[in-house]
Amino acid sequence: MAHVICGQQLEKLFEAARDDTDLLGMISDCMKSLEEYHRAIFEMETWLKLYSHKNLSREDYQVRITESDNRRTICHNAVLASVNILNRIAAQYDVSPIYDGEISEKHPYRREVADAVLYYIDSVIVNRA
Image 1 (cartoon, rainbow, N blue to C red):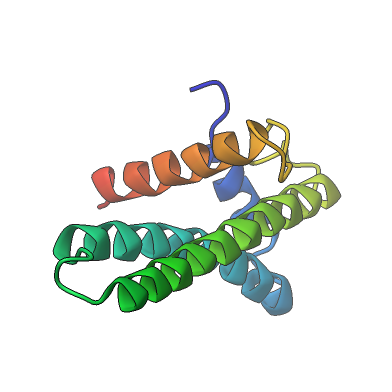
Image 2 (image 1 turned 180 degrees about the vertical axis):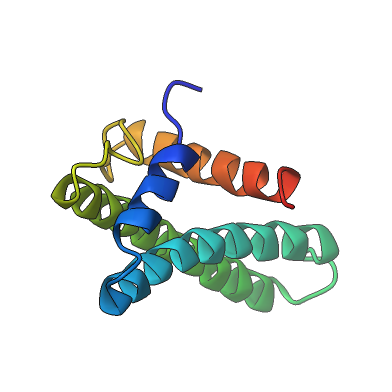
């Protein structure tokens, strides 16, 4: 993977913002968007495994798939915005970017950011205390 969410830079950002509760709240909201994106993917993929057009009417199945995909897309867009915000905050505190790749809704950048976020979440879980 070429670009990652750098946990070390995030730690530096958290430390730099430690005395500003409003800023910590904003950073927290950005971090929550990463988890919400992860959850949206998990829910959609799990739902697809549980149900099929054989379990539901074709119309109900299509509605549910469309709703799940729209939610995932909204969460993905929120992730892009959050990573941009975190990078701007990092720059204000002379911290290197938390993500050094291009952040864009265009492909392949959109997918690269998503992959970096999912990799970061996985690393947090694997390396938990």
